[in-house]
Length: 270
Image 1 (cartoon, helix red, strand yellow):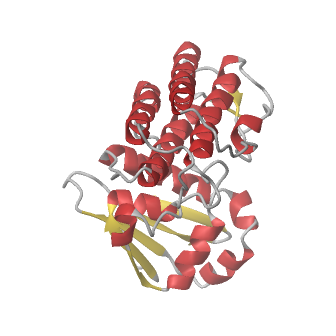
Image 2 (cartoon, one colour):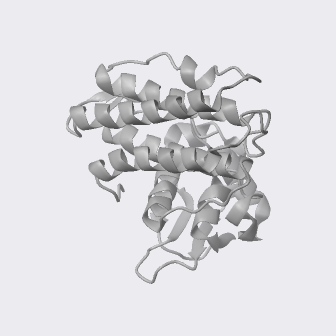
């Protein structure tokens, strides 16, 4: 269920990066990032810039198999980062990725790391990198002492994406504890508050036979996770103790939510 256009994603990759760059202007690259334990701000920014370059290489080369991800997952922590260099690194990476996506177009086929989807449209990368950038903008903004906000349609689409990843068969197979908790038909209801009247911001997740499923909307549930839309998004991403995530309430079976959250995480969201 992709809600936004391909061009919107291309635009947002750069726009979200520019907002991040503005948020960290003047911040100390050695500042700790509370939402990424053990990381400092410089390492986070290099991780994100590396993610943009990794995705750009996949799209530029029309890769049919895995591309080395050292720039993403093997980022050393430095204590002597140059803020100007980091700023350029972010701007160049986002610009390169957006240009690669536009040059390829959504009809191309490229590799993805998602189980069962070894090849897909570059739309996958456009969407994934939009939300990767937005969530890491939250991490960086908080590390720099600022406040984070995200447009409603982006937050809704990011939650849709999380639900889609969280219901992959491979994800469920790797979380036996979640299967046990959901086995009697219990469901989770995620409800955003304070959204525009026309915004459909409710999700229901649970079991359908032997597989996890999700849908938009509400219904009977053992667990209700309720709060501001951006806070709801950041809570499922494990940032619930920060920013607007502090206003999210978990009602009912909290153990079920903890198991669901731990079991439905996906690559490249840390």
